Image (cartoon, rainbow, N blue to C red; front, top):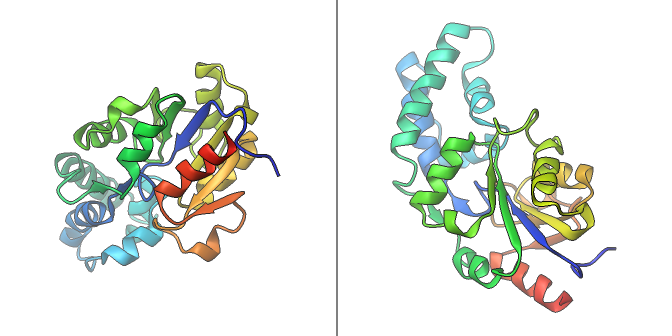
Length: 218
């Protein structure tokens, strides 16, 4: 197995990896769907569905058959969520100290949340200053699990795949990373259960363990 020697770039997922955002996403989702007669969704159910982007999240509840409701619900979600991004959302424990300690590395965020919302969320949490690039679902021709956004980051920052790794909490992140030729690190503390993350090269139970992995390799 490859190790972290020669590492130049660390790519992070956002929701469920850097930020514990489940409650705010749930609140926005319920604001969007309950007006149309759908039952409210619990946080623990929302986080099982997050990861494929906002449009897909709304589709999973509303379905594909009623385009008018889907479009209106999506609009309600985006408007509400953009105004309530960090009511309850906070960085996971160890995120800030880890980002500080990784000051010598290039760092990027690739989210399946829209780029504008991703940047706004990071800015409101005080994390934006740590990153050289932030991409969202609309930043590349395809979103994760496609390797397209990863390849865009690598090309822009002029870094080879074997000098980079991706940290994420879902199989979507791991699939994208492997397809792009990166080392993959799965965060077990996020939105997915540990048993779904077995394809990753490494597992971490908290963000501080990422720092240990990287420093030990140095």
